[in-house]
Image (cartoon, rainbow, N blue to C red; front, side):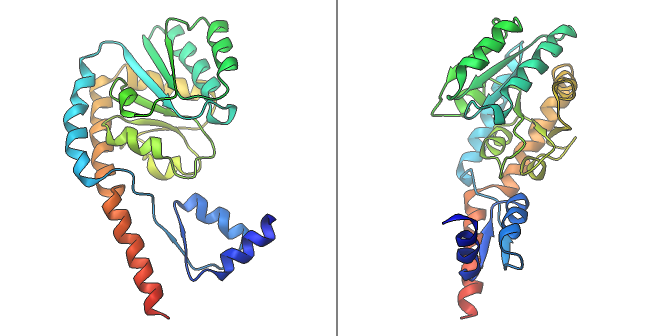
Length: 241
């Protein structure tokens, strides 16, 4: 029904729950003055966190520093920027590799890999059902999309014990805290490459950022915490009726 119908539906709601501040700001453009709550999606069951923490140590036995990208392959997701950044990292003499997991517009990405001479440094897995099959082979995640509503993959990576290098925009900037659980870059392949070099050449610090990332997800993104927050909103709305 278009934007007007969307706005009318929003105004009929007793309360609106947004999954991030970014989504809240977007919704308020359509229907200013709404009663809204920001509740970040629950991603990980509490009972899974101990196993993720235990497995987190396995990755540090690998010599080659590995970055990962997981998600649909599309120009808006930034795979091309990541490839150009990897080329710059290698040209600086830093050994690293990149795993790109996902399906979509793969042909242009494969062509760019050849153009940049990255065939030995990039692995494309196609769609993966279990993101942790990739995350436990990686030391950091790249999140280059400028329009993430929140970022489930970002949370999953942090929960697995690795820092995220994220574009300083939208929902990513609400999850990644620079120099605490990851790094934020301003945009462009060279800015991204600088962050990649920083993590790849400072493995002890990278490991510490990953440990803090795991702790932050335990506190902020459990399914149980999310359920309790949503339930509290329901109770408050019903009390007012």
